[in-house]
Image (tube, rainbow, N blue to C red; front, side, top):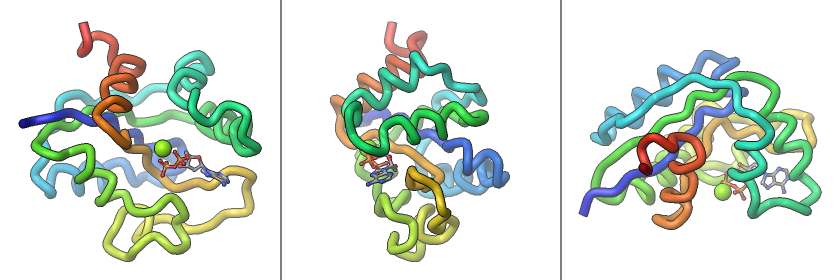
Length: 141
Ligand code: DAT
Ligand code: MG
């Protein structure tokens, strides 16, 4: 059964001009792009998106970082795309993310309060539906 996931190229990825490289890896894997939009996320969108992390020590730095510049928001489609993009992205910590993954190949540790790791990908069908409704309400109507 085909499914959809929300992918974000976070402000560090856009600023480092890696949007094309990251889109290219999603397409080269065989997934279809359904929507792609460069936008500057509002605090309202970010607080909904990261609601699960509210109260954690890195929450405020995370939201501030995500507000610091434009994000490329993407909806991609394909069989098992949710799991497949998490695999392409690699582990949360870019220092130890496996080489071959987006975070492992293109990310590194920086001296910031929040981990900057270039991309977000929905982690379950429930998260994907919730997140697509936040970033692309027109697709969920
Ligand atoms: P992921 O993005 O791999 O799903 P997550 O949902 O646990 O990871 O966290 C969201 C983002 O917050 C993550 O991409 C980077 C940042 N982050 C997570 N854990 C952190 C920590 N312990 N310290 C600083 N930043 C963190
Ligand atoms: Mg997550």
